[in-house]
Length: 247
Ligand SMILES: Nc1ncnc2c1ncn2[C@@H]1O[C@H](COP(=O)(O)OP(=O)(O)OP(=O)(O)O)[C@@H](O)[C@H]1O
Ligand SMILES: [Mg+2]
Image (cartoon, rainbow, N blue to C red; front, top):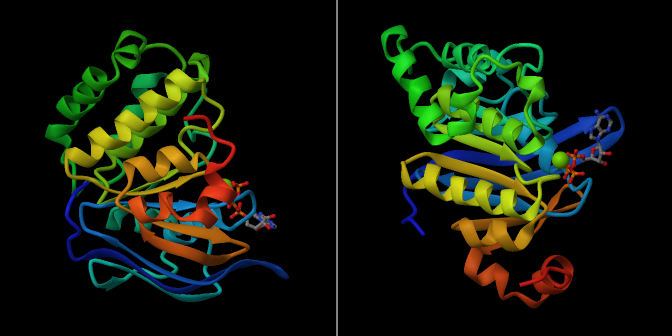
């Protein structure tokens, strides 16, 4: 695991509500520069709501989000992307009726200051090299890809936005075990390349294995946190989140 740097992301007392439903009830956490931090927890714990609020898709009801010291609380989504807060949402946000290439070209335009026009073709080719299946099918409609391939396209799109913080919401959801391994290898690879990652997962064992620091979210609050090695050996985490997993 990498050494923890200065905090890139600081979330302080974040609250998110949908009408009367309090989804996130005042959580605080940090993501050090160049680290991988994971949020784990059961269905409905508030994981996606947390990412949505950081990415500007949801307006927080309270609290503060800072990126490299700058207050980015409640920015509209496109401004959050421009600041480098890039979310690959749950359920693979791809443009199904556009080709794979069109999906990547649009993604490469999402943060113009970070990826100037002259550098975009090479950046897209780099994603084709990382994901050969996308390169082979670049003229195919994205909707014709399998679930795993669509997840790879969604991650390639996220990377082309040149994230300062890449947020991945359940990237392994619904994938066959072999593809789950591929996705987590990819998370480790992207991390090695220097990208800071905030990973949301229900697959707690694997998420703790690829991350530096973890937070357990339960009913909108942080129930436990610590270095992933400590969390993975915590009896409470083992009982609630690791017990049913197969080694
Ligand atoms: N659009 C919405 N309208 C109303 N309530 C919502 C909405 N989205 C989420 N919620 C509620 O907010 C709470 C947190 O949901 P959230 O999707 O953030 O959880 P999660 O941890 O991502 O769960 P999952 O593991 O199922 O993805 C839940 O009680 C959920 O029912
Ligand atoms: Mg979710």
